Image 1 (cartoon, rainbow, N blue to C red):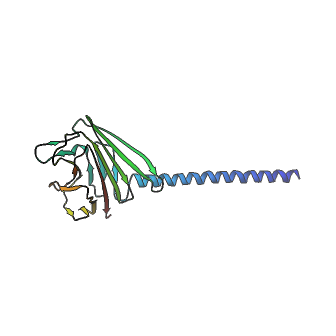
Image 2 (cartoon, rainbow, N blue to C red; image 1 turned 90 degrees about the vertical axis):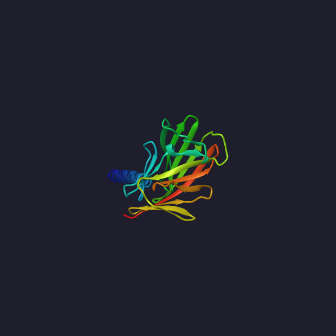
Image 3 (cartoon, rainbow, N blue to C red; image 1 turned 90 degrees about the horizontal axis):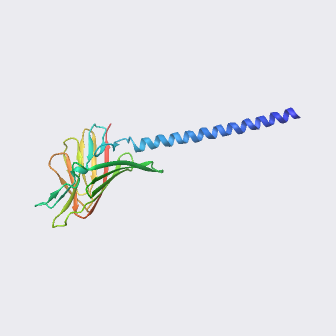
Length: 219
């Protein structure tokens, strides 16, 4: 009787231990899968990779080209006798990335540029493997005047032809098409160098832009 009871207890203990080991393994496996998905969805997407380490925000494309979002290129201009770059050569740049949206494993990439009293926050929010939202908020303090505009811009690393219609601006190059959705709050100007699209609005002390980008590449 005693021997049978001991064997039963040992069997039960082994069963409990095996269940614990299986639970630990499952938890570890789930964590590994989530970590892998998180890295895949937030670092290297099918059609773009975000580099938020330098003096601008870079969206790298698989055709070896990239989009450049650079605070130094912002301009406040009235088209006549006033033109100022809010963020000059001594602009201080700080970078960060924060949080995840658990459902989509998204991550936000932020850049803060400060120059004197001017402050510009750029946030890139990946939505999926082809789309992202670019948000730019710039706080400046220039005297308001007639026709004063705030310009920001998106630069492509090579020369392309911009195709524009009522809903979007598209550029295609070496198997990749970048689409910039239009917003009726802004104006869009081809800078004329085959690389740059300027996006502008009436000047306010806090200028905010929300820009939807779609990147489709053929591999």
